[in-house]
Every structure is written in structure tokens, then in C-alpha cells.
Image 1: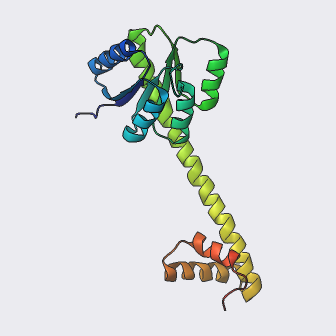
Image 2: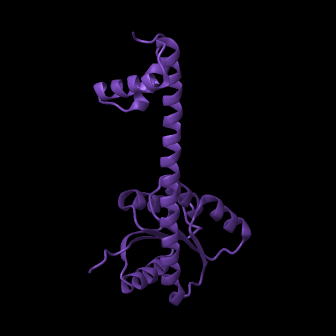
Image 3: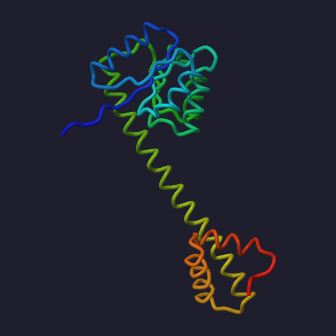
Length: 196
């Protein structure tokens, strides 16, 4: 069974560093889909390729690595961002944690530990992404339920229906109109007077 190659974007303003990383990754079976010399190009490459992993330096021209990482996280363009940097200062580390990057490795990089570290960080990044989606799904369901409950209450008051009748009323409208119950509930709550 052949597994698909993991895709990587490398962002570093040093061409030699990019070349070394590219070679190491290709030798390890990764696919380097893009290289960037600044944060702006890294962001654009992530928008285009949505790679599995982004390896990025912090200090780069035009858009620094932390700012680019923040935008990549906000736009959900990758499963893992790993910062490779010469900076050990806590201010950079704290900012990286706040942004939500998955790893922070200090240069010079130990080639033997890079790939195992990347694999673990990618796994954790994917797990966090799955959890975020689950939370969003549950949150959305709860929000929908709350809106439907409020609409049901209005139907009960204005049409003199029981709770079950109001629910059936909203569900039937949803089926008739081919839209979600949430959309019907929003319309009921926004309308000035209930349709008889």
C-alpha cells in the first residue's frame, strides 16, 4: 500500500538553508511544493497549496515569520507550522505559543531529529484541528437548537400550539421550503407578525 507524500512549504530568507532543508525533506520522502524567501510569499504558497507542514524562519523581510504564521493559522491553511529559528528569546517563544504554531526548533537544526520532530508535531497539529472542528460542530448544533427553541416558543405563544405542534410546524415548513429548520426559525424570529 503506497501512502501519499506529505507536502511542505519551506520559508527562509537564506537560500542555502532552503536548499539544505529541501534536500533533507526530499531524501526523507516529503514533497516540497514551494519555497519562499519572505513571509508574504510563504502565505501565498500556503493559500495555493495548503501544505501538510510549513517550515518557517521568524526573521524574514516584508512579512516576518510570526505574522505570516498567525495569518496561516487564522486561515487554516496547514496542519502544522514549525518555526526554525536562531532566536531563543522568550518573547518569540511566547508569541509563537499565542499564535498556535505546532513547533519551535532552534538553529542549527539537528538533521537526525528534524524528521521525527516534524512527524510528531504534524500528528498533534492534525489532532488539534480535528478537535477544533468537533467543537465548532457541537457549538453550531447548540446554537441552532437555541434559535429553534426560541422560534418554537414564539409559535406556541402566537399560534396557541403545544411544544410538539410548534416543532412539527417548523419542521414541516423546513421540508416544504427545502431549507434547514434553523433558517425557518431565523425567519420566524425576524418576522414582525406570524403568518397564519
